[in-house]
Length: 48
Image (tube, rainbow, N blue to C red; front, top):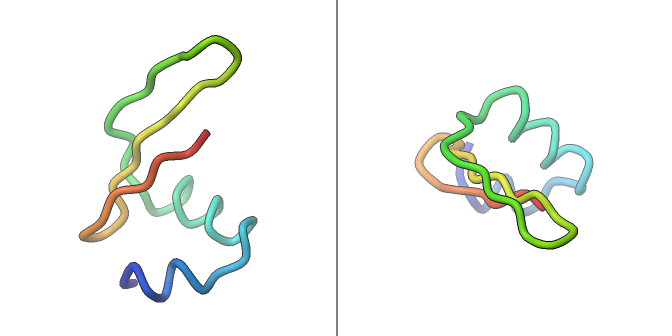
């Protein structure tokens, strides 16, 4: 999957791709949010 293909997905499909096919690299917490960094194929995604 390329970033352009990922970007065309619906938000729920993007989340499923990150969780099911991505590799969790890091996570951090800010006041009211947890931010997770995933690698999905050859690009990176931050999920809040």
